[in-house]
Image (cartoon, rainbow, N blue to C red; front, side):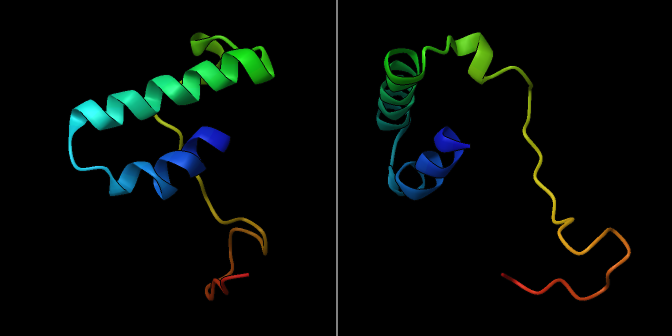
Length: 65
């Protein structure tokens, strides 16, 4: 989640792949040194999917909270 948020806040503002690759390397380095996680532990799925199930799955109106 931490990497995802950083990529949305900072990565979405970068203009080329060189800078995006740099950000990825910095984030992975911090995951390794701070959290003790290897790349394989961080990216253990091909795609992360988030959903809104706070009020249940059958709710029509999804209020942003």
